[in-house]
Length: 96
Image 1: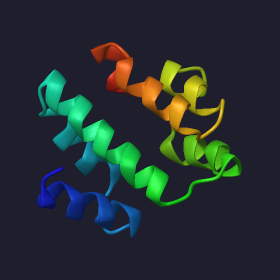
Image 2: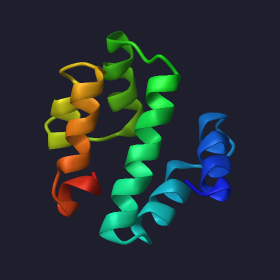
Image 3: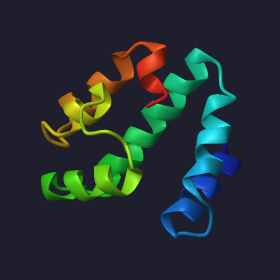
């Protein structure tokens, strides 16, 4: 992940920028770049030692619909095998 995107991600984590800023950048990527970005993001999630009890509040804060495929996968737990499944979703699902 480019340093500018890491900084933007950290700013979002600190509530300095809105999710729309991240979405705008993500939507500008090619399919392959989206997968690379998500791969790097999954690395950050694993480093943060997210817990399964963090899942529901995270989905609620994201304002995503709990039945979206990525949300359903995440609700199964933050284990590496579940997170890596997100990388294999079709492009229309990556945008969720």
